[in-house]
Length: 438
Image: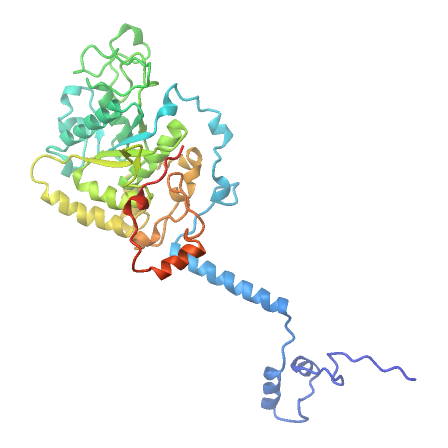
């Protein structure tokens, strides 16, 4: 018996001819037909693609669609820091070279859970406390002259009073080095002015801050026990004229914020940096015209529970003070140049708001909170598409607002919801009030 020659799919004589075999051996499908007929034959021939190949193609297509959808929805993609694959792998990590240089917090800091925020608006550059209402002792914008410095002092005074009355409060003055003519930050200057006052300052338990300068008219160091530490002619922005220093004072500065949104978010990060934990309550002392901006936009951008309560106390409170006199023009300007811009660009990373940050950062500084508050690294770098408004709010978990991966409705609950769609009225108390968290 003569062995039969093996048939190849590439052979023109085999029984398993296909469009591919025809194209390779040059044989026409129906003899010497037209080229058009051969092309039709090839296009209509059965494909030899396997199920695995189809699955791979579908997977690639799906991945492409998801990546394009993500770009359309969220705009800029964030870049992980060098040495880390993603921001997620960065969470919870403060580089040891940094953490090893931070001393343990003073006794009593572990009791702090209330952040009192005073945003800065200008820089105090004087050295005489009694002249705090004189414009010449401040670095001001033209529109701030003629009375605004009195309001700045009201903000400082009220912030100190609130923090002093609550032993769990940490007062944070927030504001960066925003002026080309200043050597210090807004926050540092306000803290210096507060310390130079005759106000009762908030301190940790057991700390004595009664040794101050002999007169609050002059912010100079004249006590014998501190000469050599702070020079007798030192200005308020160069030293603290009190022997205990600031170790036990429940006040600190946040030195990098360039606008009101960063005042809030960066101060939360600074609270974590200073205490080792995030605040559970927030009180803001600022301009009345900016109250809506904080209440309705900034708090939503960071997803702070403005209607929540913690052991009977509100988790969020805004205390307003405005300049004396008619403020109609100020409120109209805030609506057009402040609220409306943040309403569309809630994280301030596009257009005019981004440009303001550039103009307010002449010394080219950037914050340290990616490493000192790594749990919120993602939102610190969050920049959704321009004009996205509430649709671009950061969607993932935050230490004060944990998120689950689903919508929170089980199958039974969903079925009940569908059956009683017009009958379920959510209790607003449970929409905002969260269980106490450690």
